[in-house]
Length: 177
Ligand SMILES: [Ca+2]
Image (cartoon, rainbow, N blue to C red; front, side, top):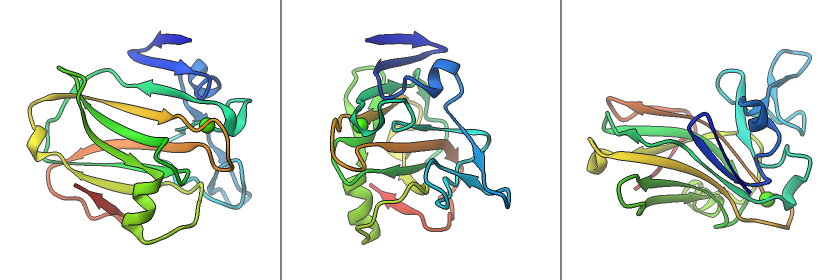
């Protein structure tokens, strides 16, 4: 299945819930007003009202799919986004050169655990900083990929890709090169 809407290309069932409503996953709030994921009391720590997740689709961890952004230009030297992904290579973000579709960078749940020195899985999004100086001026696109059709934690959460004029200082961030 491939669905194109609002400049995004969606393949597979992993995104079939929130993005059909063009919004991503809805924010739920704890009694204290903190943003929650589907497994309270973990906080999703997303920005704004929604985030993208590949569990909350009615099919759970078994669903797979790829969500691709429309191309956009790298306008600043640094970027960061929020990620919480299962401990696999199959749950990952890709930064792709829009001109030739070459994958410039992959960041999987396996990578984030190695970089952070942690083995636990959490729904809580945490920052990933990327040095994008080599790609400044070029057009890229993002892929949110879930190729994990089974296993506990066969999903990922993603939010808030931004460019920065300087290397950002973000609590709990890891940096990928
Ligand atoms: Ca999955």
